Length: 97
Ligand SMILES: [Zn+2]
Image 1 (cartoon, rainbow, N blue to C red):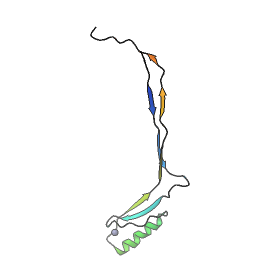
Image 2 (tube, rainbow, N blue to C red):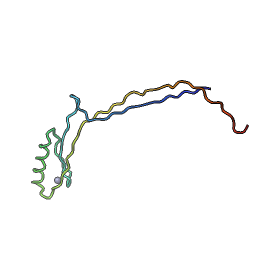
Image 3 (spheres, rainbow, N blue to C red):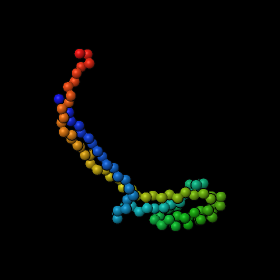
Image 4 (spheres, rainbow, N blue to C red):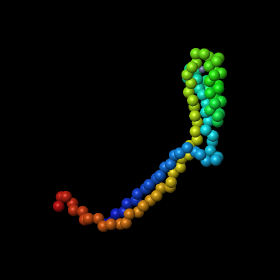
């Protein structure tokens, strides 16, 4: 009797998208007290200036979150099948003989 094995392999990759057509990385600031969020922008200084405007109107709002949206790319290589050569199997002897 002979046997044969097939091994499948899949390679996955995930990395920041730096292609020319990638979406831009954007920055926004969110007040941790009331949740008000600045508009996202590609310059991180713009949302930070919104913090001072918001804090000026609401002096007790002193904690904020920076929200960074960064594009990523993911791709997979196709499955690879490998056939091993057929090899003879040792004879099977039943235990009850
Ligand atoms: Zn606030």
